Image 1 (cartoon, rainbow, N blue to C red):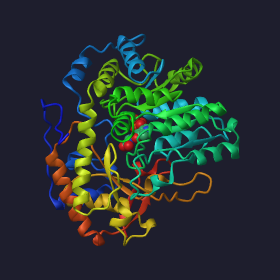
Image 2 (image 1 turned 180 degrees about the vertical axis):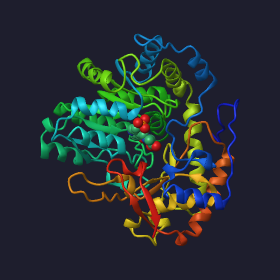
Image 3 (image 1 turned 60 degrees about the horizontal axis):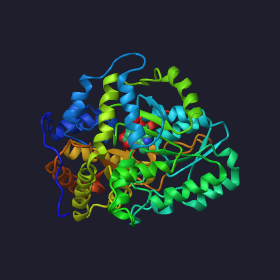
Image 4 (image 1 turned 30 degrees about the vertical axis):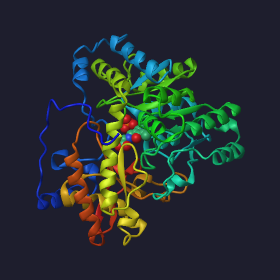
Length: 457
Ligand code: F0G
């Protein structure tokens, strides 16, 4: 394959507006130097997240018109159930308003106070719900994942020795499940290999510990397995995705990513008893068992999105190809990024770019603000601010990775948008020593990165 092009053409456009530097200076100060607090109309190219930002297809929009809005027993629910069974292979579907709704239910059903939940690097909302249920998260990802320069092809892998040590220290009965994230977000969108997923599942089966996937970006993980792992080059991503799920007892999914919709998610499991218990909470926290937190039309678009994402391999190939294109431009410009380039975004190594800033002066937060100021491109901090504090000690977690994430919405931006983004990042990197550090002026207690405010030092 020489080069890729998008396997679609554009039918509807949404104008975006370039702002002046003076406007942006003002806007980012008003936003407390937190890109989450900017108004989207003040953003030129919005790479804050790939979550809920996809462009839906004409088929998905058409599907919304036939959504069944019945309170109970909606036809659209059964379409969704069929799609999840076919593509992911889990029998029991528990629909939720988005991924964290599913994480909440799973954590409440399986975790007892004092339990320990091993996982491959944390995700913010996932760990929050594990701790909220009284559990403690323990990171068992391989060491290479914490090294932005390691070229390990599967930096999302679980270290089996670290996993074994957790089981030996706490006992298998204190480990309610292993939380296995596919294409690990906080590591830079890095995949796990099929061999590792299989080995973890076998080890866990030996101890009677279920493996629960965070399958939010399992499609992108399947793509990397096809590209990088021996024996998978001739298998479709649909087959590989199904095989990944076969090595687990269930999954939580934020459908706002792989599944190509703007809202939605689900918990899906094999064990009817876990599903039954989750549904008793579902009706209290989300909605009835046949809609969770979604409208009928949302479920209809989601069912269609699940089929669409695996219909051809070209979809995910072009998606990851665009991320790679941006990554390559930045590497050529000498900007330090996490490598290999991940599935959903390019992660800038803020520690190296802002080497003049101490960790407590929040280099990634400061860099994200500086990029917005330069060009109106919006990224997000994924470092010490996102990592929050240890609930036991009250101290900041100090992650090795101090990153700014430039996340690509699916089917939204063009190659020219990537060129403009890369030019700006290269320019900001060249003059990085001028970027001032930041300090908190407001620090929320939970998931602080969303609403925190800062001021320059
Ligand atoms: N798991 C992973 C790996 C995620 O990336 C996200 C969301 C969730 C769970 C939670 O799902 O947002 O639907 O409730 N990630 C978004 C992001 C917010 O920007 O990375 P949600």
